[in-house]
Amino acid sequence: MIDALIVGAGPAGSLAALLLARARWNVTLVEQHAFPRDKVCGECLSALGIDVLARAGVTHFPVTPIPLGRTLIHSTDGSACEIALPRPMWGLSRHVLDHHLFNSAKAAGVRVLQPARCEGLFPRVIIRNLISNEVESPEARYIVRADGKAAADRSMADRSSGDFGIKAHFVDVNGPRDAIELFAVDGSYGGLAPIEGNRWNAAFSVPAARLHDHRGNVAALFDEMIDENRALAIRLRNARQMGPWLAAPLPRFGVSDNWPENIIPIGNAAAAIEPIGGEGMGLALRSAELAASALILARAHTVPVDLQRLRADYGRLWKIRSAACRALALAVSCKPLARWVMPAMDGCEMVSRAAMSIMGKN
Image (cartoon, rainbow, N blue to C red; front, side, top):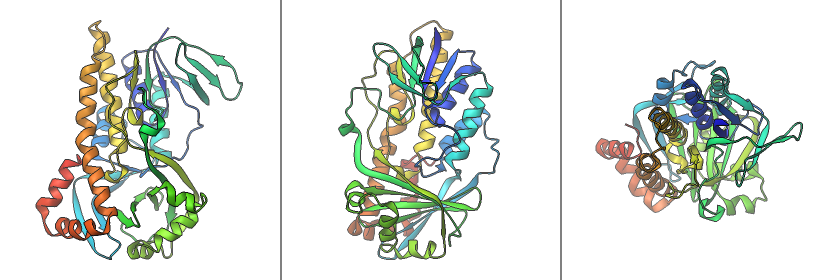
C-alpha cells in the first residue's frame, strides 16, 4: 500500500508530492498530460505563493521570474488608475512553473505515472496508462485530489461560473514590464502580464454566451474585445501572437464541508476564486502546503488527520479573498460602478491599500 496517491501534477499536486516525499512518504503522482505544457492561467504568482516556494526551497527556476510591483486598471471609458502592490508578484509561465515543481517532486523520489488518467476512485482506484492502455488499482492510505475537480458532492452546475478563461502569449506589446494591467471590456475583464522570454500573457474572463455567439472562435472574440478598450488596443497595436489561443471553463465555488473519506482536495479541487486578483496559484500552493503538513503531523503522532482544522484553514485562505475578488470583478466589468470605483482607488491611497489587503496582497 502506498501512503499517498496524488491526482494531478500542477503546482499544488507536485508541491504536495515533494513535501510528502521529503517526509519519507511513499508517494505516487498521476498526471494525464505530457510536461512541459501550457495552461489557461493569468501566470502571475502572488506573494503568498512565492513565500510557499521559498519555504520549500524551490525558487531557483531555469529562468528569472519577472518582478511585478504595481497594477494598472483601464476602464472602457478611457479612465485608469495605478495601485502599488504591497509586495511584488512574479510573472512566470505555467510551462516553467509546473515543469520545475514536477521535476523537483521526481528528484525527491516521487513515483510518477505519466501520461496516465485516474478513471475511478470508488469503490477502488483505477489508473489507466494512456500509452499502453494498461490499468492498475493501487491501494492508498490517502488520496490527494489536485486535478481541479471538486472532491465533494458537488455537481458541475454548482461549480460553473458561466464564464470561460482564454489565454495566449504575445510579443512586442506596447506596455510596461513591471506591472500587471487589467482591462475592462463589455461585461467582463482580463489582463496582460509580462512573463519570461520578453513575452506577455494575455488572459481574459469571457461569458460563455459571447464565446457561443462567435461559435468558439476565440481570436474573433478577442478582436472584438480589443475594440472595446482603447488602452488594450494601444498595447496590442503592433503585438504578435505566439502560439494558439487556449480556452477552458472558469469554475467558482467555496470550500465544502463534505469531503469523501480519506480524500483531501487541494488547489482548484478545494475551491476556485475569481481570477482577477491573481491569487489562484498562490492559494493552490498554500493549500498543498497545509494539506501536506496536516498529513505529516497526523502520522508523526499516529492520529487521524484533523480534517476539521484543515477545512477551517482553507476557509480562512479563500473566503475573504473570494468575496473581494468577486466584488472587484463586478466593479471593473460594470461601467456605472467603474465610474465610481476607479477614481476612488486612484485618488485615495487608503482605499487602494484596503482593497489590496482584503485580497490578501499583504
